[in-house]
Image (cartoon, rainbow, N blue to C red):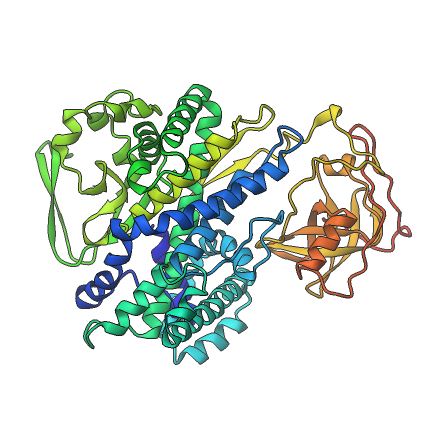
Length: 574
């Protein structure tokens, strides 16, 4: 299923319509596409390069700060996501979301946008089969009232995420319009100095004919959807490239030599034309996007009866040869992006191997003669035709600027004690085995140990809730007061029971159970410093009291708990 189509449909259900309706056809689609085409031109990309470098250097400085004492494990997906948002923020809408200085993002928009994809993906089936009729009921106000009444926590979380994004977008748009009305001096004072996509779009819209002019709602739609589309896919692609380079050290070294030599000859940052022309950097980006497209399948719907010719005839169950397939109007068609990019009949027997060198020589004739409709390098990664990804050059430039800065500054290596697995959740996302990489017996934290290797601060996600421990009940169980107002019985599972001492008053993160609202599982115990940071970021209420005693158990030892009175609380069913 087309994930973006699902997302937009869900947002419409939430009565917030400031998203591009990607099902638009005919004149409406032409009008929006016509307005956006100039801002993604090569001429405009050249002007974006200094902004991209500025953000990339802030990322480099943040990573240097965290590795000043030597090699350190860093969550690259987290940093690539924050960087991608800041890149589209500054160059796309002339707004800075993230200084990239703190360990975590502090802007409300930054914190909710990363939750948008995973939360929305959980609603694919409810939206399709349960919520679809809601969009036909009454006014948006009535639909919102019904939505608020429905007992779906995930739906309410998505509502809050979309509301935050919408409110932020409205403020940004109003600020931009005000600056444009005040004149060039006001525009120059803003982030992007009027060269960002939104400023250019607004200027073009002011000068457009009445037929081509976009409404404020349509401009907001461009803003919200472009941010989402540019963030997760680009950050995922960058993370994938860095993961592959950490595995293939020879490729990383060769790329570093190419970048270093090019920068040396140019005397600094590479302008657009020189950067996009680096052959090995380009080959690495192309090969990664071929073998590992961020989105592996999309859905399209036919608008008329069509006949799909087959490049290779097939034989039906009746023995007859089939050379084409008739597809009726309004039929959903699944486009296999990854399947096309990896087809051995087109790419050869090594089509499932990551080989950047394949792009440094002529491509197979079987691929050229296939005449694939993709707009980028005979690939379907960015699709093709009138609905191809309009920002594919923008995405390419982002990746190459960030890689050129990071590869020259750092050497990346894969962790030896973690198994990184990429999961398809609408958009490909890396995950690690939580039971590995915790340090084992060679790394035990004591009560007063001040470890420089601090973990990243963990924020509440969909299906989770912050809580404060009220009472320890024994056998790895406790009673907790959640900050959503509910009191829950929780279970400490797995190795956490042996490694972490949890006391009354500690702040913890609970994973809620789908069909047992009064029960949960402890997944994180926050240190006093982490709890204070959560409070500073507004995650915890101001009146939350922090337990100043941090305790961590030995890996092979049992935790010591405060036991409640026997029979006081029965949670044997947890």
